[in-house]
Picture (spheres, rainbow, N blue to C red):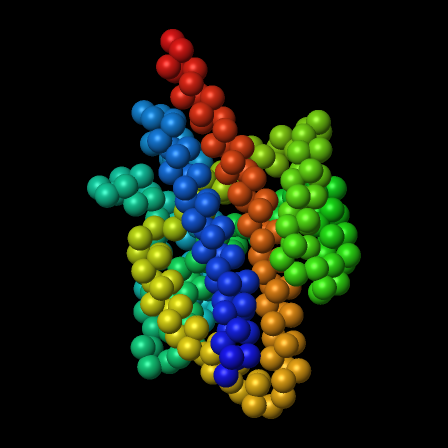
Length: 262
């Protein structure tokens, strides 16, 4: 029983935990950024939202399709909403279907996963040295580095990323990436939807661990290794998005400071 609980906790921390931590940090960066921009926040949100909001909503829609939810209505971008909502996806599902219930979690966090993936793809195309550093680190770990190895890869990723700042491609990536990164933040309905699906996801994961342990001890250890690998990849995907958000946050503090000096 102890082995099952330990495996379950490790799997949750390496997957849901990493996503939650990354999403929280990105949300805090977003909030502080718009707060520092002040009166120009709405204009920045609208300008970047022309690209970022449709991608955000399409991320929700993608997981609606994957988990067989029916898309009732979708609005990719709008600026006339009274409550400031730039876009939304309304969907329905069969509440008796466990697969569709679990889908609520992925639909809710969809923008974090999809936009992180797109930013990673952008890095691969424009600043491949960063992605190469990541890939080299992952192969070096070879499933044995654990969390300490992931931290080492993360440090190398930061070094490679800022090492490419002398190139024009790096600046293009940061500017374009800002349009995506500023719209990764989840809304309250997104979070509520994700939490409703998380409960069923955790229950299924726990049952799966029990089954694996009953079949054989080696299988549950294998599941742990898979979870750690997933955690490493998720950390790396999210790190690129977080770096861009931190850059934007730094610029917003400079803007705020310059306003106070006037």
